[in-house]
Length: 130
Ligand code: THU
Image (cartoon, rainbow, N blue to C red; front, side, top):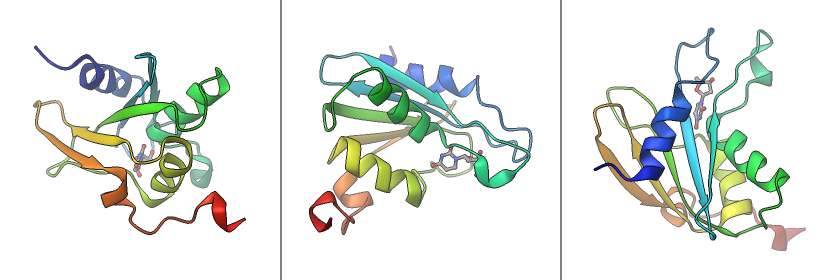
């Protein structure tokens, strides 16, 4: 049986609005209470306004009252020849709001890879610099 967080990331991907890139991404973020917050990429004809799946999941959770760094792990789903880790902008956001959480990449064939944020984003720009 598949981990519910990975299934949630794959299901969320179905809602992706990606008519410009045709690259659909899903995300599922688990908070410390075990609640799952999902996201998908949402594109726009003005391309730069596009939001990545990971950031949609983080901002949904924060907007619903989950505290900063009160997250356990995130799963990110995409369908590409190689499993695709979060983009640089999402790594910055994930670090600030989630810290050194576990990041699981998954594709529709059920292939997975697990990372820690610290390894994906080793020298973060952090709030302590402000
Ligand atoms: N995308 C994500 O949703 N997450 C990432 O970490 C990388 C890229 C989306 C943005 C855009 O809609 C599409 O994938 C192609 O870049």
